[in-house]
Length: 139
Image 1 (tube, rainbow, N blue to C red):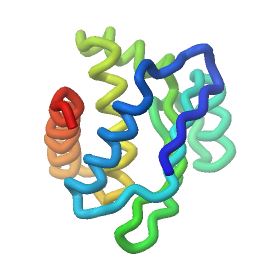
Image 2 (tube, one colour):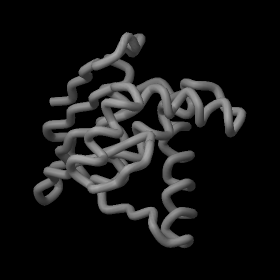
Image 3 (tube, rainbow, N blue to C red):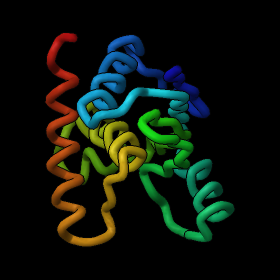
Image 4 (cartoon, helix red, strand yellow):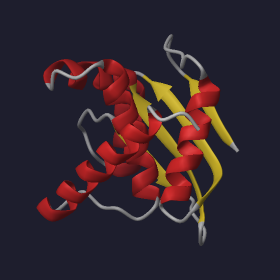
């Protein structure tokens, strides 16, 4: 089950389209969507999680807690809408595209992709672009 939770004023328009897209991402990576919770929040909310659980004192756009078992992708994906908006402005991309990038980024982490080393970052960015394009294809 894919659920969206909002700890801020932000709301997804047409959540069913996002659910179909997330299921397609999982399937395209050889997985099935299990229990996936997207929690949309602000910078302060995510900073508190970052400090409490990861011992990081920095702002970030996403934190993913992985509960994947076998080929069933499950997890809690926290997204700072503030960071997504600011990063979209910084990189001159529309808010929706940056949101799709971050949403797919969480799923890709749950599917085993990393992003700490340069070669992993390149692979992650390529996969994100591939998944963003999938959103714009009717299912």
